[in-house]
Amino acid sequence: MKRITVLLVEDHTVVREGLRVLIEAFGDIEIVGEAKTGREAVRMTGELRPEVVVMDIAMPLLNGLQATRQILRASPKAKVLILSAHGDPEYVEAVVKVGAKGYLLKQSSSKVVASAIRELQKGRMFFAPSISRRLKDAYQKSPNKVGLRKKKENQLTSREAELLQLIAEGHVNKQIASELGISAKTVEKHRQHLMEKLDIHDIAGLTRFAIATGIIENSIQSTIAQGAE
Image (cartoon, rainbow, N blue to C red):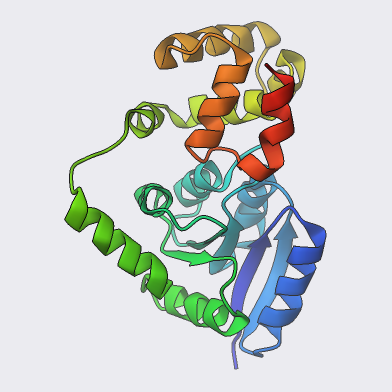
């Protein structure tokens, strides 16, 4: 029997190792690779060509949203299943917008994760029941209402979102330049343009915006936000 090939993307080693054991226990799924950052996920998807990418939404260097966007641009046949601690409809809408085919909360059972992988491999979408209910409720209550922060986030290009994440994670211009393959001078120009576009003019404000819109995860980045005050 041919097994479904999966790339597992999770920055916490113990979680990643646990997921591997639980998922492979079903027998019809094979973990062909593991990535610790969003950028690794993009590269490894191109190299390994997995059928399904199981992706944590809060990843260092390149978050799950932007990684998904880049993966599907380079490998359009890949199916991305997002795992997240957040069940807000805004998060789900954002991942669907970039092309992900499934969304599960991290408290989902391994049986549900395996079922989602199988459904995506068949070309179907899969959402946890609680997510589907929240999406339905959100659309019924406010079908066209989008907060100002989400509007601003949706105006960002993929490169601007990458830059915002790296800034909010505390990387300096030289580090960002190395990560993105551009000059430090270009990074500074992009930084200034980003601040003008968002009308946010300090690092603390950019960090709070990144947390509020889910570009980085609050639980990981709260110390950075406090230190940038």
